[in-house]
Amino acid sequence: MKSRQDYHGQGMTAIFEQYGAFFAFGKDQYDNHAKVGVEYIHLGSGLHVPKNHAKAVGDALAENARKAVQQDIDENGIDAIIRHELANHEYGYTWDITDTLSALEPYGVTAKQVKAIADAMDWSHY
Image (cartoon, rainbow, N blue to C red; front, top):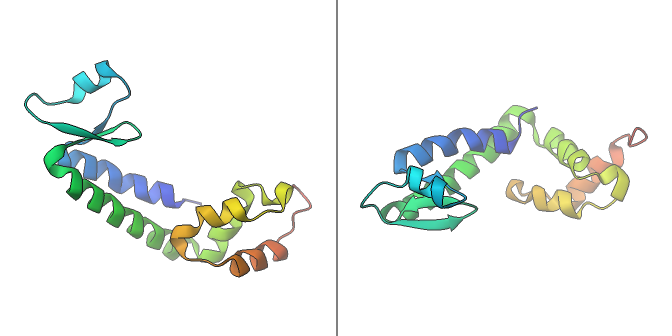
């Protein structure tokens, strides 16, 4: 099953290429990608963006993330997404939905909804 990160990643690459953004985790990487005469700002996690495109990149990434959530729901269904996140966050070991709820925050699901699906799953193989 593809996840939100899979869908989001596809669009992120296009956004970075469109605006000249890149990831660099050291001076050598930065120097290899930075264009002479362009002022960059660091947006965190190694992402460097031309200063004049920072807002556009931020807006495009936010829209891409929103679309990725919708594509995930359309292709996988919210119940399957919840089951996947419960397993991914080891609910079967912890019996705590806190991490799952955090991961599902962009989907607008409720704790009651997640707990109902968790209670209906067979956790005996965990």
